[in-house]
Length: 116
Ligand code: AMP
Image (cartoon, rainbow, N blue to C red; front, side):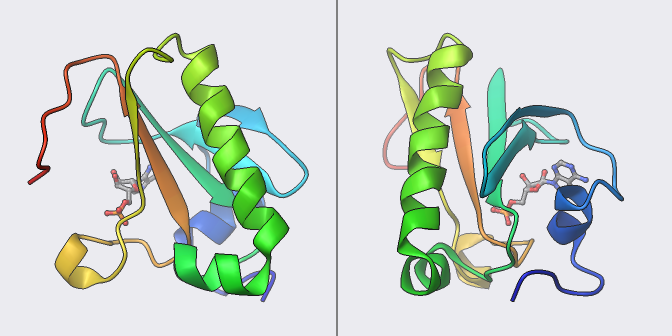
């Protein structure tokens, strides 16, 4: 599905909802999280709508690969290449709040393990 009515991140992908976009590729968009959990907190989304990272990998494997490449490129560009984390919360129990696939790139502070 390329776009879902009422989906926040479809709105950002369409340019209808403002976001601080820092990088774009054919299939993806990277923008700053509105409520950052670390000095660097960027979300990578696909332009097409998939609910989860697993659904993306099933439906568009090259899109999933592009999302990962773009995440690494964002980390490099943000200067956090020496230590960053990629998170894709899946399902309500993991805290997924926007059901349009996105990966969080987090960095710029020590990141403890296990996560909360
Ligand atoms: P998740 O809870 O893993 O689904 O992540 C959703 C993320 O989207 C959260 O970290 C929110 O802070 C972020 N977010 C929600 N609305 C916006 C927005 N309009 N622009 C940028 N980030 C947003």
